[in-house]
Amino acid sequence: MALLVIVTAGFWAVSLVLGNSSLPLPQLGGATSANVPLLLFAPLAPAIALNACYGTPTPVETTAVRRVAALDSLLAVAVLAATAAVAAPVAAGWIGGVDDLTVRTIESAVRNLACYTGLALIGRAALGTHASTVIPTLYALVVSVMGYGPEQTAHWWAWPAAQPADAVSWAGSAALLLAGLAQTARGDFPRRV
Image (cartoon, rainbow, N blue to C red; front, side, top):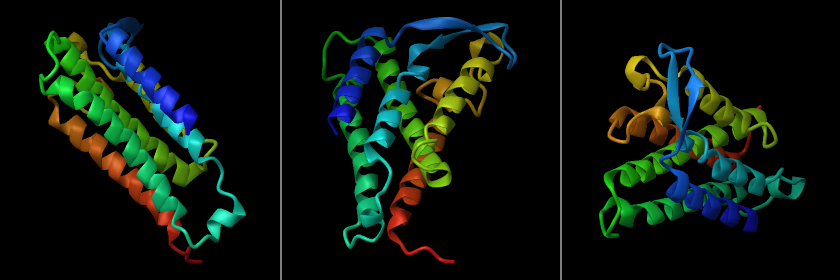
C-alpha cells in the first residue's frame, strides 16, 4: 500500500511540475514528427503500482468469504478518487495562479489514469497479475508513435493523446475503467465450468 501512495504522489509531483513537457517522436500515423507530452506516459506509474499492490491471489483469498475482488475494485476507485480530489480544485479554478495549460494537463492526467487503470484491470483478468501491465504500456507506446495525424492532432482511437475537451476520449476511458472494475469484481463470483 505504501508503494501505491508513494507512486501516486510522485505521479502528481511529476504531472504538476513537468506536465507541460514533451519530447519529439517520429510518427507512423500520418505526422512526420509529434511532440508527445509526458502525460502520455506518467499515468502508467500509478496503474502499474496498483496492479503490483494486488499481488497474486493466494489460495486462501480464492476461497475466502470476504469479497477480496470487490476490495480490489474499491482500491482502484480510491486511487482514482484521490486523483480526482487533487485535480478538482485546480480544474475548478479554486487555486489561483494556475494557467489554462496546467488545467488541461491535469484533466488529461485524470483521464489517462482512468484509461490505463481500466486497461490494466482488464489485462489482469485476461492475462493474470504479472502480465497485466503489458496492455496499457503497449497502448501508450502505440499512441506515442502512431496516434498523431497531420498537424499533430490525435486520431480518434488515441484517447490519451486527445485534447481534454474531447468527449470521446473521456467516454472511452470511462468505459475501459468500468469494464476493468467489473472484470475485477467478477472474481468474487463462482466460476462456471
